[in-house]
Length: 304
Image 1 (spheres, one colour):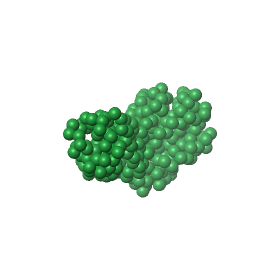
Image 2 (image 1 turned 90 degrees about the horizontal axis):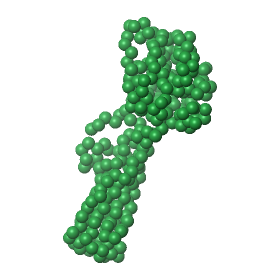
Image 3 (image 1 turned 180 degrees about the horizontal axis):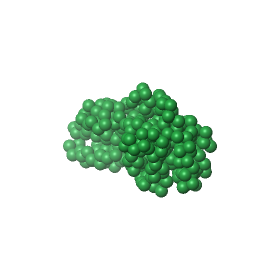
């Protein structure tokens, strides 16, 4: 099965369709008048669809089991067609497209089975996904390709050339997935003056998003939060609350991160852990959702 452990829970919705084509209008009349020999066609098909939705992972080998929070089956009887619409919703890490399509297909097959004594030429078709919402793809319209981003690696050992930077490089790789290319990257020692100078330089260069990695732990040299926080015009506590909550589901050590986030002028500043894994998980937790700031925050030039 595909690894989805890095994903965050979000509300996800899918609507699927299937159509049963009858060969004569009297078939549809029999459904409307509820005189099909096997019973109420639409009620049986609705029950079958709900069972199929909830058991999709048992039928489709690579489909993840997930909590089905809401499901609805609707019908439209039109000419010689029974049009089935199935809506499925969940709050989970992966979408419910397959669940919706599975429900629509089984509803159609159930209708076929119940109608075959009175119509020998039924055809099932037009099975497709009509709509899906939720997950990172829903945020594509919020991504600004011209966003100016700077990454700063805070590490005494990396600045001294004693260790290779992996966290900063990993952050840049993550940014590429959201159409953010060519960010600047700098490496500095864990010194307050150096950190402040990077902020000053970023402001001078009209940087929109400034990402610090390193210095958010509990060692005596970890002073990034203490240095950055007093510079904020407005702190945004929820950003790092989301990151720590995400991290806590993966390691209990996430509670020890002291990262902060906020705005300095028109620039968003986020401090990430210095470990490669910690930085990557924080990026997974926050992006692309945090980019919504550049659409709604008053004063941000990309939100005008």
